[in-house]
Each structure stands twice: as C-alpha cells, then as structure tokens.
Length: 146
Image (cartoon, rainbow, N blue to C red; front, side, top):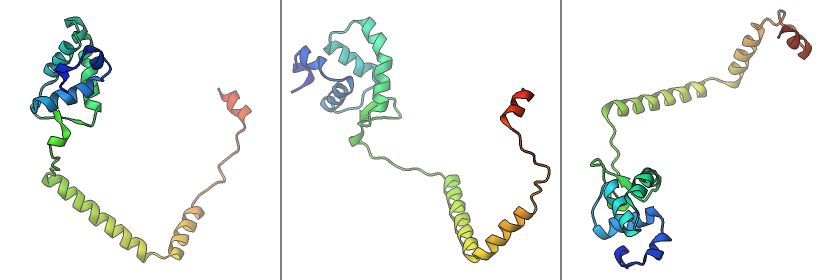
C-alpha cells in the first residue's frame, strides 16, 4: 500500500524515517531534506509552523539512520541503491605502507632481543634511579601546605 493511500491514523503510528524510506522507495529517486519532510508534513496534515519546528530533528534522525545515505548533491537516498567506494589518495597509501614497514621492523627487532637483554635494560634503568631525595608525605602534611 502506498503512503498516499494510508489513513492518517496509520501514518501517525509510523516514524518519520520509516515514512522517508517508503517515500524514497515509491518515488525511486533521491530527494532533498525539505522536499521529503514537506511531503511527510502534508501527509500528516502539519502546519507550516510545525514543519519549521520539526525539520531540524527530522534531519538529525536521517543522519543517524543507516538505511539512508546523503549524496554529494545534498539529496537523501536509500543506501542499498549505492555502492561504497573506498578512495585512498597517494599520501594515505604511502603513510599506510610506511606504517607496515615500521611495524615489521619493530617485530624483527623484538625477535632479535632476548629476554636476558631486556632484563639487563630494565636493571640498568633501576640502578640509575636515585631515591635518596624522596620523602614520605602524609595527608596531614598536604593539608598544612594548602
């Protein structure tokens, strides 16, 4: 059944996004936000003031609903009608290539280092730490400073 043939009581039970899906499917073409919402408002017999008051929330609901895609022409369409094309420019490709090389080099370096070498590094770092200047501070001492 088409939206225009439905009773207003049935339409009022539907969400705006469900109505949008049916409108786009029935018209078989992409449409802009004001045109779609104006059609919904006409179906629901909304006034111009209600249209103005609700169009912002309507737009937000479209952006959150994964059934729709916003095209470059600023028109909404059903996502199933469009394929997603991943475009990677040369700079991104070069960055990804460098990241992979760095990751491989790191893994090779890690394989070459033995656990004993790692223990030596950690022990050396601990030996360089001078804790003689450290002192214990209580909560009372902190309160006195404030």
